Each structure stands twice: as structure tokens, then as C-alpha cells.
Image 1 (cartoon, rainbow, N blue to C red):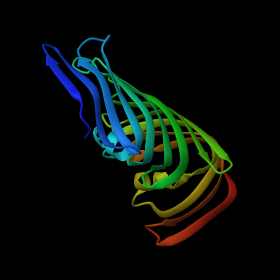
Image 2: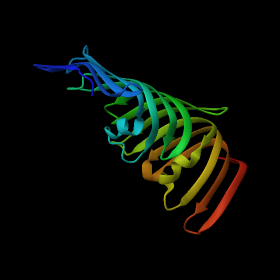
Image 3: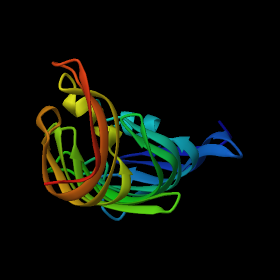
Image 4: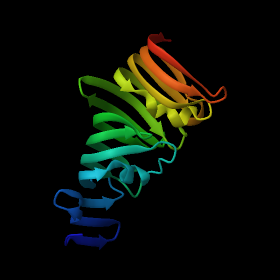
Length: 212
């Protein structure tokens, strides 16, 4: 932790250049924390594990991974928090499934109790666009996905007890929504899908086929 100045006064906390970490990998905080929308606190991230950041928000049912750089802007934290973020995440993963390099714009929705996202994911020559939300409060998600060879292994914990050992890629437009434990799917995609059907102890395979 580098030297910084932290001031305390009635109704607010001011922070000047509080940096945790080293030159190539750090979290730096500047600004003022109060109950006024005009006051803000800016957090700069450089190669910080996104899992540590989201663990603070108690994302227990969804596991994000990757090294994040970018900014998180906090306002009105002591009353009705406004949280906005713009991050670039290398080796972005969801539920241990590697998806690629992600550019994530998002904000915290207090009523929803979750994060609304607009995300572009690039992997080799593919480019997937995802919008929607993930909500710890509702224990669910609603994602609109324009998939370009997207790794579908991230659904593994959501279909636990039904499918396992999932190796799958999908192209097309679909919506993934509902409670984490009972996710539903709608859309039209072309997929390569290999998985084990647990109750039958049998493997099955779909090759370049359409799923509706």
C-alpha cells in the first residue's frame, strides 16, 4: 500500500491516491464517499483478478474470472449507490469456462440487485455480443446473446445433475434466462455439443446442428 491521504468529516470520506498493489498490478482509489450524487469515487484497476472485485458483491452462484483493467465509478454510496464500470478483461471466464478477451460496460441496478451488462467478447476470429443482467438478489440472469463460436461450457453448474463434461460451441442469436438452477433457453443457434447425460451415464454428441 502506497502512502495516501484519507480525510474524515461529517457525512463524507475523502480519499487521495490510495493505491494497493505494485506498478504493474494495482487498485487505486481517488474521490469522495458521501450521500450526495455530486460526489464520486473513482477506482482504477490494472490487472486485478475480476473474481476478487465481484466477490465483494456476493456473486456466489456465478463465478467470473480474468484479469481486469479499467475503471469503476462510485456515487452516492451512503444513500442509494450508483456504480458504473468499464473494464477490459483478459482471459475472461464464466464458471471456469474460458470465453476470451472481454470489453465490459455495466452498472449496478439497485432495484434489480444485480449488474446490467453490455459485453463484447473476442476469441481468435470470433466476436460475441452479450447484453442483459446477472442478479445475486434474484438468483438469476437474463442474457441476450449474439454468439460467434461461443464456448457454452459456462452453463455447466446450471445443468448440474443433468449434463456434465460439457464441450460445446454455438453460433446464432439466443436468450438465456431464469433462475440459476432452472435456466431456460430460446432462440435459434447452430451448435457443436458434446456432453455426458448423468442419469444415463452416457455421452452424446451434436455436430453442426441447429438447436431451437
